[in-house]
Length: 243
Image (cartoon, rainbow, N blue to C red; front, side, top):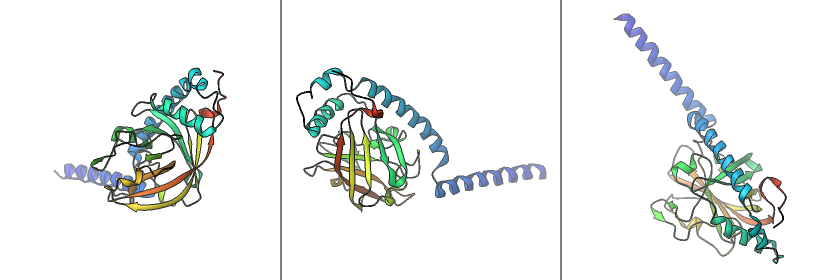
């Protein structure tokens, strides 16, 4: 009986230490178990992005912008065509924020499964809170609001440091059809039910959202950034193919 109690006590102490270690890692960095899973999923998203970039833009897509000299109009045309190519949960581009040392693949959709792979682009039919967004979130280049959400403590926690992004910092979205640079203008903290943060405002802007504060979903931290530059080239610095 005493031996059984000792074994049970040892097991409970070991389990307690494991839990404490997990909590400590989560507080200091991010949740370790889901982060391992997130790394695997992020790898899949990278492969999907490579496949998508290999097939888009196609020769006919490039031919459609041959007679257009304005880079913004070229990007808009390609973005419209790109929208028809993507599927939910698929890697669609990369987001880079030097201010928080972030460089990861963005996936299409903000449902639970998609966000396990990386930051998610608010798809047209996605919900925010309990309300449907209506016309949804645009793709870079379409001249409207581009919305991206990410976790702060689980599944790689890509937006863990979202509150350290300052005004003037750059956010770069590299899509298979162009690279877009946005300059941060402001941030705010809102309730999860506040859907207006991703509404269109008459010009292209990027909106990043994440739960706030850390370890809580009571509020949302929102970063706004305006479009500053467009570079028209394929993802990964690949040269444009001839149409």
